[in-house]
Image 1 (cartoon, rainbow, N blue to C red):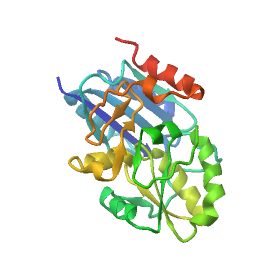
Image 2: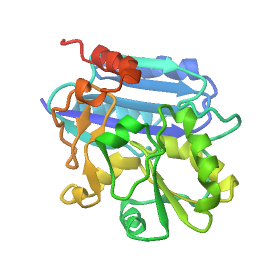
Image 3: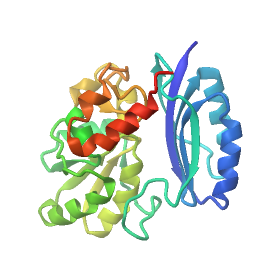
Image 4: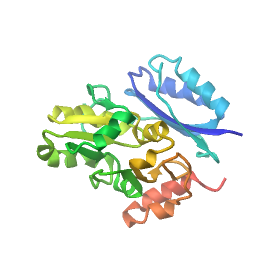
Length: 263
C-alpha cells in the first residue's frame, strides 16, 4: 500500500471553526494526522493511502476559501500518525504578538529557485525561523540560529538585530512556511526587507529531489513518527532520543514518544 504524507496550511477567514472541524473529522476518515482550525484559517499534517488522501485534498479544496491549496507530499514507509486529531484553537500558529495576521505581508514569497539565488548573495541574512533543536539537526548553508526554544521567543531576537540587518535581505525559512507567514508582515513593519521561502523546507526538498543537499545540510525534523527526513524526503531512522538531548526538552521527548506508542 502506497502511503503519502501531506502538509498544508491556509490563512483564510473561517466563520465557524467548530463546524469546519466537524466536517474535517468526517472528510479525513481513513487518514491519520494533526489538524488545527482557527478563525484565521487551517493548518494540517495528515497521511494515509494515496487514494484516500487525494480524495480528502480534493474535497477540502471544494470548501469555501480553500481552492488551490498548496500541499507538500512525501512518500512514507510506515504510517506517520497513529490517529487523526482535529483541534480548534485561537490561532493556527501562536506567535505571541497581538494583531499579527498571516495575510498581511506583501511581495515576500520566493520560490525555491529564487531562494538558491538568495543563499549565494552576500547581502542576504539567512534566518532559521524554527527552534534550536531543529536547527541543530539540519539547516540551510549559512543560516543563523536565533537560539529560541519557542516561536514566541522569535520576535525578541529580531528586535535585537533589526538595526544590523538594515539594507540587507532577511531570507527566512521554516519547515512548511507557516511560521514565516506570521512573521513576514510584522518584520516588514519594522522596516526590514523580507523574503520567505514559499512552502518552507518541505517545498524546497520536493522542488530539488536530486540535488537538494547542495544547499540543505543535515536532516529536517518533522513532527510525527518519522522524526526526521533527509534531503531526498526519506525517513532517516534518527530517534527522538537522539534529537532531544537537552534536559529542558524532556517534554518534547515525551510528546514524541506519545506519537509513536508502538502500535
